[in-house]
Length: 285
Image (spheres, rainbow, N blue to C red):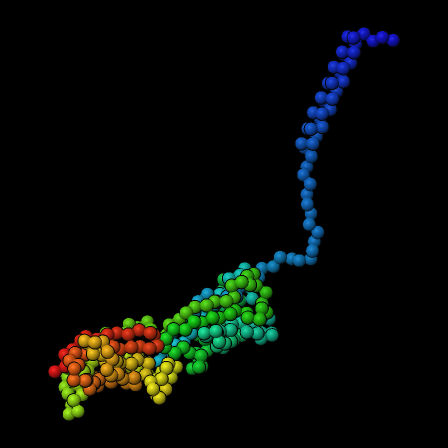
């Protein structure tokens, strides 16, 4: 049976409309489809707020028997330090090193019995073994390192900030005075006495025995500060004192100058702090 052309055209148009509607409905349905949710399986690990014990500063406090080290520690973490870390087992919370050599260690309860560091943000400043003279700094410059929780017995929020290093000075903060000398007299041997006029400005600490410094010849207990006398015209050293002992001993400086030396000056050298001061130049009659 032969189908008229007009009927075929209508049938084709109908099928095209059906495809368009189906396609449009499919796209609309797809656009409203909710996204897939990814659910992680429970691994048994519950997030914890951990403490962070660290040292934030070191200072040196001057003392006649040697500088006392002052330590500032903080709990920078969001969690508390558990009581077991204070008591059981007792483990080193802080280990000190001076010039890369061990220099004492202590448990946390030894410096923080009141548990000031326990809570988040807690801070504590304490003296490092103040009664132990062998753990004090002698005058000069020192590189100190302190390690918190050295054996990692405390779970912390940050394990990368446990080491603190700082270079400290002991007895070097007070300026070294500039000496002023004058000619006083000559004795029978021809020695010229050239006392330091402002000797009272020099503390006795500057002239204390310093066995930790190089000796003066055979004297292993030479003073920290030496006084050298120079020919002002050639800058050649002609004499010196390395064991004065007291600041007032600067009143007794003398020199037996060679005949050609007519002008002199002195240099006060603080060996511990690696500094020196030069005096005025005076004429020798």
